[in-house]
Image (tube, rainbow, N blue to C red; front, side, top):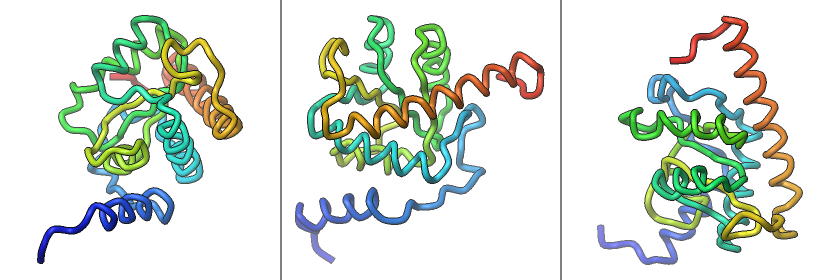
Length: 172
């Protein structure tokens, strides 16, 4: 029962993001976790995050994401669904909708942190194609998967807004 080496910890993080996703109980998810990504979109989004993190095109954490949204940067916001307390990120979906930035919730903040090359769980991040300023285009390594995640997240957001406007669901 000693300390594990850095190599063992890194391989366990890689196994978590590459292998089967851990199942998060629905009771652990925040009530505002809509639109929630399905398994296929979650896997693709985490792989995209991993590739974007290699090129340092990630804004990680509530403070950085809010600052980027207020500056008007464009990208894709990925939020963790199992965050507690909910007040930590309850304002971010509103900011995203105001700035026409698509957002999507994934199940686990631990997987989100592991995908963006950090040991700490991360409750939200923003993929900013082109790095600082967000004016450039996505790197060739992840451009295709980023575009696919972006369009799917945008469709989910539009469906959520349409359902809320029709009164099908209530947005708290």
